[in-house]
Length: 133
Ligand code: THU
Image 1 (cartoon, rainbow, N blue to C red):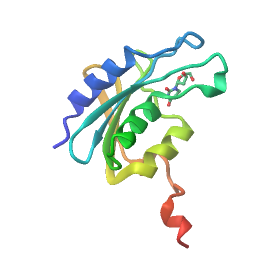
Image 2 (image 1 turned 135 degrees about the vertical axis):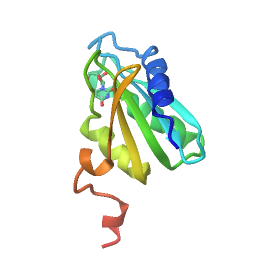
Image 3 (image 1 turned 90 degrees about the vertical axis):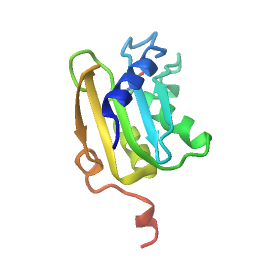
């Protein structure tokens, strides 16, 4: 059973480290790997704006670089009292490493969240399977 409450809490812990001097829009993420390891992430901005890294990708890249290539859940928290959905680039990165039934957990407070499927947030995804056709 996936502990969504814990993942949302971890995403907020990640958010606390967000480096956002330009937008002041803080985002946090927490990914749960197949073997139940949790990696947190935050957005990391840059004076050269395009070099900014989103919270989701920070968390995912931490997991990948530590040898965990399958992600069964990701929690994302951003703006207060509303849901922050992952950007298009992050959706593409999530699907690359997602298990078939990945849970996309969107938190709007430490105790309120909704859960989405991959297909709901990225229908018709282009994946490695398409490269085999
Ligand atoms: N941001 C994320 O971290 N994740 C998203 O999915 C949406 C956007 C960040 C990037 C930038 O630091 C700030 O939010 C404003 O775009």
